[in-house]
Every structure is written in C-alpha cells, then in structure tokens.
Length: 165
Image 1 (cartoon, one colour):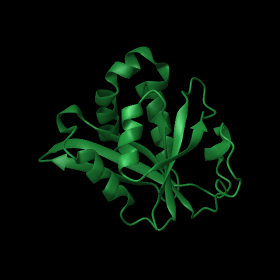
Image 2: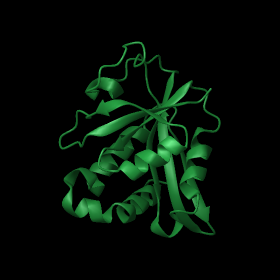
Image 3: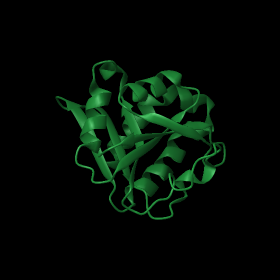
Image 4: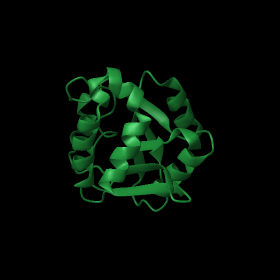
C-alpha cells in the first residue's frame, strides 16, 4: 500500500513540492511511516475501476500525545487532554485531480470515520487553504484554534474538531 500512497501524494502535491520542502515526497514518506506504525492506524483508498482516486488515513491520539503541543490559541486544558481513546486524528485526505469536485473526498472522509469509537476527530488545515477549511466546516468541523507543529519548516494550521458521537 505504501507505494500507492506515495504515488498519489507525489501527483497531488507535485506543484507544492517543487517550491516548498515541507511538501516534499521524502518528508511525506517519513510522516507516512510514522503514522502507519501507530496503533489503530487506518486507511481507506477510493477506486474508480482500477484507478485509485484518492485516500484518507489517520490514527487515534495516544494518551498525552503531543498533537496539541504547537497550539497557539488559548484553549481550556480539558479540551486538549488526550486519553488514548478520545480523539481520532485524520492525518491525510487527498483526491487526484480527475476526481475532485465529484464527492470523492466526502466519501473517503465518511468511510474513514464511519466506524470510529472515539468521541471526536481532529485534523489540521493549512491556513493558506481557506477553501479547504470551508469544505471541512460544511461537513460539520469547527476550528479550535491555530497550531504550528513542532517540525522544521511547518506552516501555520487551523486545528479543527468534529464530534463523532
């Protein structure tokens, strides 16, 4: 599965990777390896015939996970307390160009989150992509605050939450 995920990523992020080292395939591959090694990691791939249209993946946040460590907004500490079973982190959702604006992203999103037992999901949206943020808001997500991951060259993100139960 790893080669397929990297192939789709390289296609979807080709323009961004050309000018932004944070979007490079090598960096993404390291992140993919880290995510896929996490307990509870799940991934869904959507196909149109034999062509992968896109995918989504994530994993539950472990108790005390550093996910919220780069949060720049004042938030009640109880909101960001992780128990190991409270929050599912949707790490990646991407759709190849021919399948954009077809509902494929929503189908992948819903398939990934359909059987989750956590009370909520979280994801990060690059602040430079307001249309993506608006899309997630139309699916029921709300913004918790701004977050900059503690990774070299990381952009500023909007941390978002979605109730699952």
